[in-house]
Length: 272
Image (cartoon, rainbow, N blue to C red; front, side, top):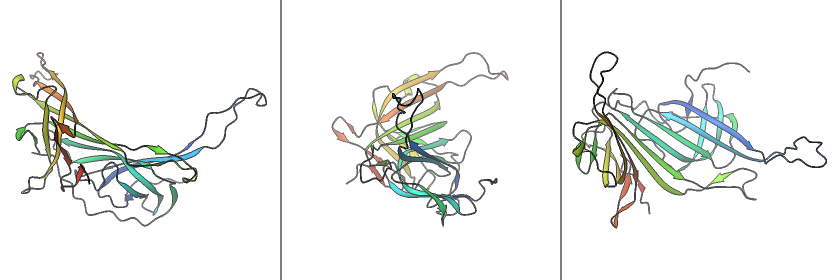
């Protein structure tokens, strides 16, 4: 075993990744203890499973939870791992205050065997990220000033093993869910979103002049947490009032069907 950095590693079909991690597992059954084991455990090989996490700079990832793909990740020498996968979770971050590069984290799960080997991989494109500077949120068609935002998309993908899976855990696309977290400054309690209300939320990505957004319709506001600090900070400056808002996506409100749409107008929900 030698040493190698991650420089020029890549994942096929993804652009501008910053790291990836692959976890390869054998799901050994519970050990048995019996009259013949002399008080020691008896283990056996179980079914195989694997998962992966990849982070990249963009707010328009090419895959959404429930999508299936062939995951291929390699180091700069072309050795890596490949296997069928399904997207389990997608976390997208907006950090307006620090003007950070837009980024997302994609979590995948195995849908069959992952195999180490030598693979040809093509990065999807030249780096296309941009900073979160001046990006905005819109709640019910009114601009809502944010410091940070996070949109988490979840795929409730059930896993299974049967005689057709050759000892590998596989998965099928399941139900969908989403969580929204917003952090903002405020100066008026009456201007904050109201707990238990259903709202339409738009989170902007930089694609002017098209004014492109993630559209989450509807969001049920579940928590509004405010923080007011009277004492100065460590440098003697006053502390701005802060609010943290958490909401969950609902496909329906008062009998009306909503939507959850990516910036490229891909409908994550509803789908035909």
